[in-house]
Amino acid sequence: MAEAIVSVPATARRGEIIELKALVRHPMETGFRYTQRGERVPRNIVTQFVCSYDGAEILRATLHPAITANPLLVFNAVATVSGEIEFRWTGDNGFSVSEIATIVVN
Amino acid sequence: MAADSDTRGARRGFLITASQVAGGVGLAALTDRAWATSDSMQSAMRQVTGEAAVRRGRVKLDMPPLVENGNSVEFSVTVDSPMSATDHVRAIHVFAEKNPLPNVISVYLGPRAGRARITTRTRLADSQKVYAIAELSDGSYWSDAVDVIVTLAACLEELV
Image (cartoon, rainbow over all chains, first blue to last red; front, side):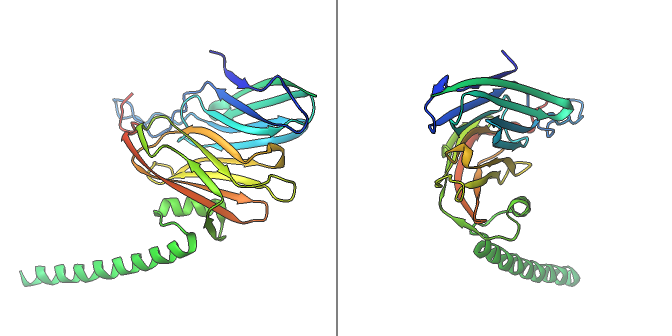
């Protein structure tokens, strides 16, 4: 499995509202679990997600341990220009993954 | 024995007073916040809303009422908003009352999103009430809540 999977329509009409899906591979260890030896398993989660497109931030999210492993986010954007849509996840222990998808807007 | 029943009586008196005080606080919180919630939830919610009033409506939290596996519960939050430059949703916050940490996710968006709707997946530690609060560009806050029954909770006690 790739580090991240995103879904963006290949083409759209200008002004159309498109659906974007973004999933990243991550265990999302909550920090609330213990090992059999009684040691707390340290928290290791994705804390931030940002989607940018056409020079603007479409959506930014702050994630907490309650979000499942391999966090998925589905949201919308207005198709404005042809170009790149960037998805970026950052988190504990220096976690940083980004994915870029291109869209053609007619 | 007499001393014992005295302390017991005193304790009962204290408990009654305490419950009345708590009841009063709860009632105040209810009218103020539109929802009755636990202390950690209250503080988590206040961190995002400040002292602003949160009204019910305009927000739809879509989550199944009966969940078999609390480890992965898909839900969506939709806010009734035109998402224009002057009238849009600024943020959507989700809270789960009985999770070890009530915060679930905070999403910040704007008119470029086109539609005020997000879908994601959460873990639920217990059967509980889940809340969604939306912050609009005019500074008002709106909310929705859903009661969820979880048959298999997200395993906090599970040893790894």
